[in-house]
Length: 314
Length: 221
Image (cartoon, rainbow over all chains, first blue to last red; front, side, top):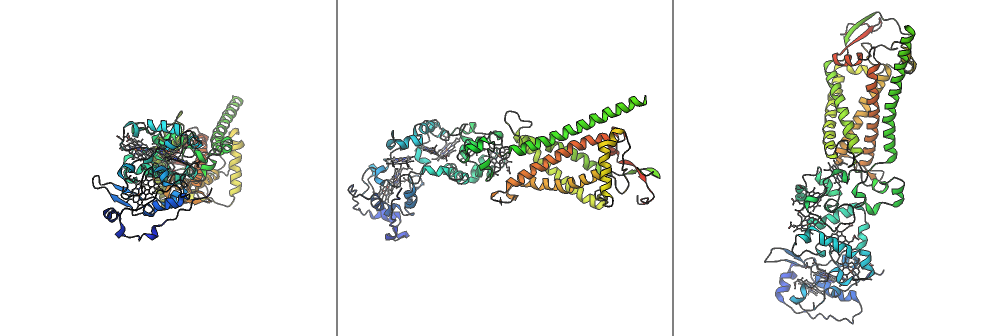
C-alpha cells in the first residue's frame, strides 16, 4: 500500500495567535479554492484543506453552548487511517471553497453505511451487525442528542488494524472514547465505588468489558448501568469473559487447546482466578490431597497396630 | 535407646503469649486457606466462598497473620523462646534419623517417643526444622508476596519480561500449598502424643513434662 504524501502546509501559515480563528473568521476573506476534480492527486487536493485544518489551533468556543469545537485534522494520523487515501471531499460533499464554508454544507456527513453498502469492507467490518447492536445501546435507546458512530469513532483517524495492538493500548484508547463524555478518570472511579480497586480495574480493563452483554463481540450494545457486570467471577475465573473480550485477539488456538489458555495473556497480566496453570493447579491438589491421604493411612495403620497389640496382651 | 532421665518435672514451656498467638494463628490459617482456595479456584457455578467475600476475608486475615508474625518474632527473640527453634547441630542427623524411624516404625510398635522435650529444646528435630522453615522462611515469604498481590504497585514491574505480579502470584500459590500440607500434617500430629489429647492439653495449659538430665540441669526457671 502506498501512503499518500500529505504535505502539511502549516508552515506557510505563520503559526501564531494572530491567525487564530477569530481573526480568520472576522476577516471573512473569500478564498478561491477550486474543487477541481480533474486534479488527479488526492493528496494535493487534501493539502488545500489541510492548509487550514492541519493547524492545531483551528478551534473555537461556541458562544451559545460554551463547547469547544475542534476543526483540526491531524494530517499524519489521517494519512495512516483507513481513509487516508480518500479525498476530504469524498466524504464532505459540497462546496468548501468559500470561507466561512456555506452553512448548508457544514453538517452534511455520510454515515459509514452510506458508502460501505454491500462492499467487501462492509463484510469485513460486520457493519450490519454492529449497526443493529448500536441501535440497541443505551445511548440510542435513550436518544442522546447528536449521538452517532462518530461520537466514538474519529472518521479521520480510525483504523481497523489497531484493534490487534497489545491490550494495554487498547484499554486506554477505548476508555478514552467513553471518558470523552463520561467525565475524567477520577470521576469514573467515583462512580465505580462498588468495585474494589476501581482505579486498577479502570486502568486494566475496558468500560466495554462490564457495560456490554456477555459473551464478547457485542461491544456496541452498551447496556444501562443497572445491567453492568458486577460478578467478580465473570473475570476472575477460568472461563473469564476477558478471554472472549479484551484478550480475544491475543489468544492462539493452539495454546487454548493445550490448556495453556493464558499463554499469551500470562506474560502481561496476572488476573486472580483466571491466570491459572493446569500443572500448578494439579500440583496443589496432589500436594494437599496427598498429605491428607498420607496422614489418613498412617493413622489407620497406627489404629490397626494398636488393636493388634491389645489383642496380643489379652 | 533413650537415656534414663533423672527426674521428671512439669515446666511452663508454652507461655501464655505463645498459646494465644498459636490459637489465633490456627484460626487465621483456616480462614486464609478457605478464602485463598476460593479466590484461586474461583468459579461462578460452585463458589466455596463468593469471590468478593473471600477477598475481604483473605485481606483481613492476611493482615492479622502479619501482625501476629511481627509480634511473634519480636517476642520470640526477647523471651528466649527462639532457642527452641535453633537446632543443636551436633548429632542432628542422627536425631533426625531416630525421629523419622519412630514415625515410620516405632510408633506402630507402641514404642515411647525417642526424643523427649527438654528445657532447652522442646521440639523434636523434625518439628524444630519444620517450624524454623515455616515461621522464618515460608510465612515471611507468603506475607511479602501476599502484600504484592494486595497492592500490585509494590510488586516488581517486570521480571524476565513478564508482569512482575506473575512470579509473586505463583510463589504465593506454591507457598500456600506448602503451608496447607504443613497444616494437614500438623493437625494429624496432634494425635501422636502420649495420649490422644495430651498435645492439645499442652497447648492449652502450657505445661509440659520434661526430663531433666544431669548435663542440662539448671536453675534458670
